[in-house]
Length: 329
Image (cartoon, rainbow, N blue to C red; front, top):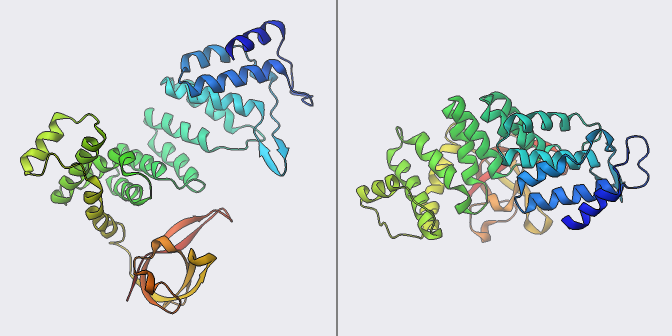
């Protein structure tokens, strides 16, 4: 690919497509393809070198439309590849400035990753409130565990340990492989060590067991702490430790919230979602995976207790209250 792209950039010139981009520019397409390939291969310095072949002022900024779906303009693609490489190279200032430029594009099809990189840069620059602001905008579109974990880290750096713990617990409870979250478990352990010393040690044990199972490096300090408590240093069954901690996470998550009651009034979409008529007169949407009772009890008119959690309604792009942690009564 590089040889072909080298040849194209030698015999062709970049066309100015800001006014008329009816026909694609071979030079631009070749360089953008190279940038994408280099990023996938982690050749980030090469990405920056190749980016110098492009004059961004010549790139079109109009998103294309095909079958009702929007596709990124060449300028958005260019900014996306460069900011990704700059962040990987820890060129924080340059990544920050270019990501800011990207957000100013008139037809930006996806702002999530630019805001993600801005949040990472803002954290590095000590601008924690700015980082949290970007992350909270992202989470309305992408409520994934690692976004919550990053918010927890930002609050921790800021010194707001209460909010840090809240988001760290959310990250721990959000479905995803446990091995991805060793840093989250470590953060929770640090945040609760004074108030819940036993549970803090369990989080360290969870991290230790995951690392042992995956044959990852383990700090001597962590090994020594596990040995001093008399815990089994050969235990690789981390999922059992996590199962025990789940109840603790839920107790922290909902400790300041009123437990609600009601009945399951409607079950839809082949039993995947439904509604609960609360005794408070409100109707609450829920998903099957938040039901903690037996399958035989998952039916209409079952009396339940539950808590409320605001979640993203992807179909409407709105945050709405959902019934969660649902138990039969």
